[in-house]
Image (tube, rainbow, N blue to C red; front, side, top):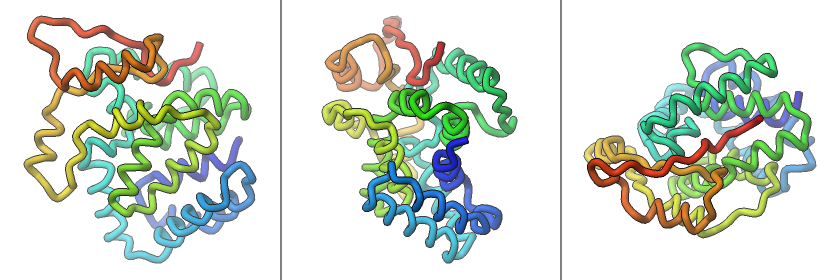
Amino acid sequence: MDKTFKALSVLLNYPTDELAAATGEISEVLENDARIPAPIKQRLHKLVAELTSDDRYDLQERYVLLFDRTRSLSLHLFEHVHGEGRNRGQAMIDLMQMYDRHGLEIDARELPDFIPIFLEYVALLPEAEARELLAQPAHIFAALAERLRKRSSRYEAVFRALVALATVELDEEVISTLLEMPDPDAGDLKALDAAWEDQPVDFGLGANGCKDEIVAKVRAGRRPAPGVETKSHRPVITRS
């Protein structure tokens, strides 16, 4: 098992006493991984320190406001790909089958596209395969990192690390397009409600379509016209 992916997975879980107790080991694993650039390691250590020293209830409240309440920061990958579209169910099934082939059992309380679970699966793969799979949602990770940077959240470091570990060349136009989607503040209840009601755009960064098609589709609008069927794409996470 790749301990770094496991450590990053744990850092993205809901803050608990168990997580705080594991921060020493997490910090050691991250420090010893030469694949992570030094500046990102420093940011990760600051997150680890925060998870160790801050009041547990404050940490939990911040976590909920960031990842559970704010759609644009969802820790469910397919939320950024399919939204509530009809392709999401099949994508979940495909992902579960992929996990099953490697013997990964997940808690029934979590959906298979929950990023910490996805990272646990990545941790089971040989390094080359892990990086190939990690590269598929890398643009989503980069967009999440930028949104967290705007909020001065130390969780930004986890997504910067994932992008670095994917070792894929990012397309800034795709990231900019992702960042154009609604990203309300967690304190703006009206804007948050509107964001959850919006029809998400159905696209995949691992789709067969070209980058220009992805960009055009996002910019075309949030809601398809009544009676018009949008073109479907395969999910971000795919594996034969």
